[in-house]
Amino acid sequence: MTKSETKLLIGIGVLILLIDILLMKYWVSNIKPGPFMSVGVESHRLEILGVNILIGIIAFFIRKRLSILFFLNTIVCYWIFSFFWNSYLENNPYSQTIYDFKIEERNIQLRISENPNTYGIYELNPNPVDSLIVIEMGMNEKRGDSIVLKWWNGEIQEMYFYDDKLIGLPEKPNPIELYKKNKTKWEFGTQK
Image (cartoon, rainbow, N blue to C red; front, side, top):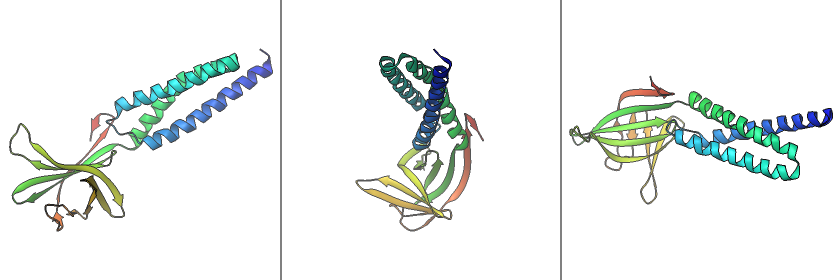
């Protein structure tokens, strides 16, 4: 292999790596991984390995030296993807805010989570074996100063959380005053 061929091969390798970095960064930002998706990272890593190996095999039949780049890229991309995944989790930690309220002497709790953006409404049961009874669960979306709580009941239903009030609960459509209990954050297995 001549010096110019070596430089060309290195240049192509760097270009492939840069394209992979941009694609993986974009992919992770679209996936928006949550802290409970640790199994998901392995399936995505396997997809990256599979694609690079497949391209490497195709390149082997076209130009053998080029296939070496894709096989090396397979190993490098595995670790770069893990870096982007962990970086996203560090910069977007899971947190949950809990609010308490009562309806007809029933103790109810609203839990609004970030990353993933979900919510749950639970009835606190005095029975210690099964202390929470799920009333409903769904996704939340920030709109201006309020949070829209969405769930599916044959069609999309919405409630609104604004200024420590819940508006539109099917059992009590008038605004309900909520009392903030706590906010917890988890970052890489540690609770704050």
